[in-house]
Image (cartoon, rainbow over all chains, first blue to last red; front, side, top):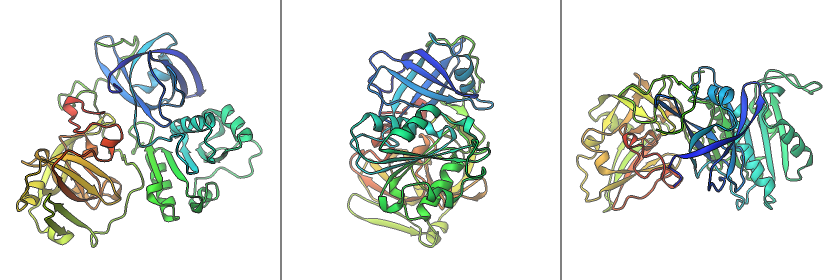
Length: 245
Length: 197
């Protein structure tokens, strides 16, 4: 079932930032995905050489079309092709969507705290979209840690949702440059800043953290030290195999 | 052959016969866990084996370190497609730990500090295929990588090599563990690409 390779048509390709792009894929008979799941993408060269990578799904509709957002990794094998070369009308192969752990379901009842570092926003955006499309009344709060305003994914949509949605709060932390008129200078995320911008432990949130390994590890440690139960924290690493970059 | 992506050439690492299908080689050691890393002091650490009859064998850290220690050099393969070749470990063979254990069970569940579980058939743990490892590359195993000690079953995808290992429970049936209940394969042989359920 989900483990078979299926052909996907590339139906859209829209730049998110200078180094990333959102790609729409249509797969016959696909029934969407759970919010937070990923797919595997397989590229095949003309001599049969293949490369497979996993990408989180950004959308959350019960549809034949899903979107992924790919950030180009320096020295990456697959991501530069997906960001720079892949064209609408091309085909590639996908496996999935898969994953039953780092997912949010509309039947979940706890408040939700999402914490994204850079491109780690992708599976969390899927959860936000699923939540907005549902009747689920639980409050969602997103903390989005970014190098700069220009590095943000889904900027317009998050800006609009942050202003208009009655059940979503969006907070930003900028680590290298800030938007014009921003009240604070850019700085590294600290435990103090983190805790000031998320739901408190007594709100008993389910927390999802996604980003580079060091970001995820650090934030998860701070949360546990601050009284958030480890069992309420789900983590996912993002952006290649990381760790040494 | 699948769909051809014209203009895609790739980096050609997978010609290496040490790489299972669909894997690429990485020099780094990525950290992949489902939640925060638990903290376990060696003074509080224990490793147990519990049989289907309820018999419990247990080792404190000191008792465990007094067992014969072996060096292991092996390739490891993560289901997320990275492989790390020629890694060096030190630990105790499961053959040593199972020496005095009597069982008729065919399956096991590995239990970790922090609540993680994974199921492994007993035959995949015996005959020099699995260890409880506490040293990596000549250094004590870092907490992020499962320290003080982790299960090491390198012929299966690395999620089977449970970090922060606490013990092994023998079971009559093959009971899905944590990832096995969340979309991943019940067995996890990288050479057969047993990735997803």
